[in-house]
Amino acid sequence: MQIPALIELTEREAIPRSLILLTGNTNVGKSLYCRQFLADRLKDDSECVYINCTSTEEHLLEWLDGIGVARTPGLHFINPYMRKQSGGGDSSVKLSNVLTEIKNAISNPRKSAIGNEGLQKKRGDDHGLQNTEKKDLTLIVDSLNHLIALFGKAAVEAFITDIYFTSKMQRLSGICALTTPSLSKDELDVLNQSFDALLEMAYKDDIDLQLRNMKMVMIRGMAITPRWVDFELEEDGTIKVLKKGSEFTCYVCKSVIHENPISYSGLYFHVNHLEVYKRLVGIYGLNLSELGFSSEVMDANFFFIDIVGLSDPSFSVSSQRQKIEVLNNLIMSCNAYNGEEKKIILPTGDGMVIGFVLNPENPLKLGIQLHQKLRTYNRAKGDRDKLKVRIGLSSGPVFSVNDIQNNQNFWGPGIIMARRVMDIGGEGHILLSEPLAKALLSLKDEYCSMINPIGVYAIKHGQTLTLYSAYSNDFGNSKAPERR
Image 1 (cartoon, one colour):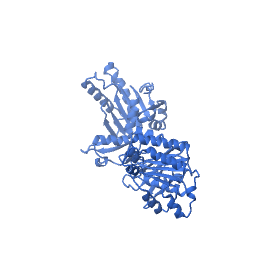
Image 2 (cartoon, helix red, strand yellow):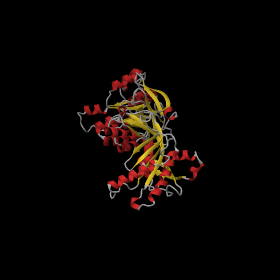
Image 3 (cartoon, rainbow, N blue to C red):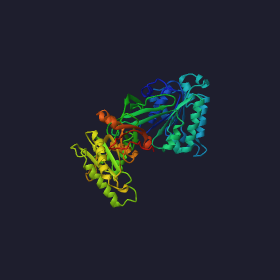
Image 4 (cartoon, rainbow, N blue to C red):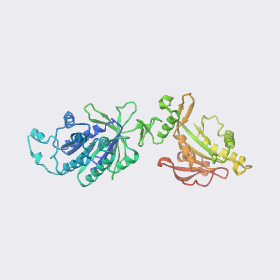
């Protein structure tokens, strides 16, 4: 099976006969891709069924003429909306009628093709009318959104399911376009089950909307490496592939997205940066560009701490405040905190996050020094008055945002990851993310005896973290955290 830009998308000259779901935002080029797919198949003298609710046979044939594709007797055009209108809006005009036409086209090729008799006379022959040789049939649905508007989601799901099983028993392949996001995740998951392959289109740049990309996300039964392929729309309504291997730029960190981007509000993000964007917008209630959102990235090494059990309602507000003040004073008395290195300091309610911009050792040194001071402080305290903490260490980028009062704030994946690491820990733990742990282990031999791998832990959004724990007789907690 051939599709436009197949080699660029998959590095293969052909793929198995498949039913493909093509997704993307409005006006990104899905309809033109469907038409080009149709034109390519007609050039190969294939039987094609083209379903479109917003066009006519005349418009389609004019477009084919404009790009130099000769009219062939293998084209079957179906406009479900016009069928319903001609039936007086009768609800009996259902998708099942369309499915019957498709099956008839498979069983009787060229018998119901549009303009068949006139085309044969124009070609000066009549053998096409009697030709009943079974050929592959290509189905093109542009678009599923229009079918849903006409017939409802349940009917379209049933229609696609029937098409899918028909394709397995007959020589049928094709593509169906779907504008996203138009369905819920659960609805889209149900629909995805009836497709052999997923193809995605998107705008490459949120400023210059002429730049576009497409990517083959998956093909059942085939191992492929998803890659973004640049394309542009030509004046004649065709797609011109520019190059392969291009990537999107994350709106938050302005760096290239090598994995699958996340699309939100017409923008594109790294998977873990969308949460950053939503958090900042939630805080300030404005578009980030209106907040003086900086495109510069500040890398830092983070120390995230909170007080274990501080939210216990049996503690008075005064007792809670006292513990926070004690923790602040102990941290400020540590040498690792008092260096001249630039720091990012943010209160978090039950604790704080401190980012060290230059030295990756400082978060660990601060954790060790604080634990030693806590042991002295807690020695003479009763269990209820002891100050118990958990610490998470990680590294990564953050971004500066000035609010409407011009106060500077920071947020970013470096802080989020440190929080995720800390959340896994319990009393006494000093946990490290894998990148920071490996960076420290490569610096000094002394870290090899205190930083120990403890395994893979699940966090939010189905992600996992490989964690390390820092401990000795003087600090940390040698027991691995419970898996939650």
